[in-house]
Amino acid sequence: MSNRRNYDIAFVGLKPGIHEFEYEINDKFFADYQEQDFKNCIAHVKLSLDKKNGFVLLKFEVGGKLDVTCDRCGNDLPLDLWDEFNIVVKMVEDPQVMNDQEEDPDVYYISKSESHLHVGDLIYEFINLAIPMQRMCLPEEMGGPHCNKEVLAMLKKLDAENNKPENPVWKGLEKFRDLE
Ligand SMILES: [Zn+2]
Image 1 (spheres, rainbow, N blue to C red):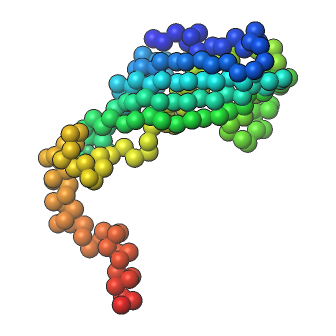
Image 2 (cartoon, protein in one colour):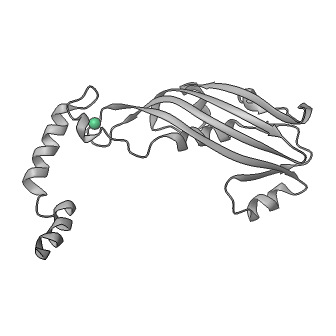
Image 3 (cartoon, protein in one colour):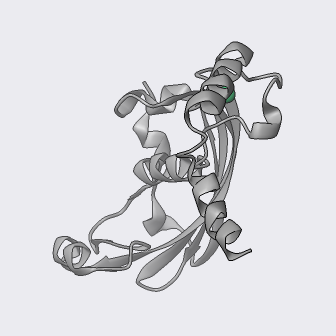
């Protein structure tokens, strides 16, 4: 289990201005959460915290890698993580009400009496958001080091035999064919 306290920042004691924090994240970090659809996560999160009067600006830079299951062939597919997230945390009297009303997903409210920022859940969320949407070997990677060649060859054959007339790519092209 990860120690969640490692992800609590006692921001009240910080001087105004920029402070930097670094986090090394691996699979253990995710043990506190529901089961993940990736593994072998090695992520580096750099957090820059800019303390202002009544609010803090947080910039998370997520880098690293993890393995997902390829949607096409079912093999482990290594993906790179690289993304950046900016959020504003404001200290207010009634954070519950404000959070319910706020429409900007990058603005959070916490109580004025709160002394710590709990960034663990944000790190969790941002690592998940940093995972590329496309969880598939690239077509040019067919037969590449990660792909399941047998499955891909079978899919390719099935595609050629069954899907040609209905293939949306061909359907789209037919329109142009009629124009000629
Ligand atoms: Zn694949």
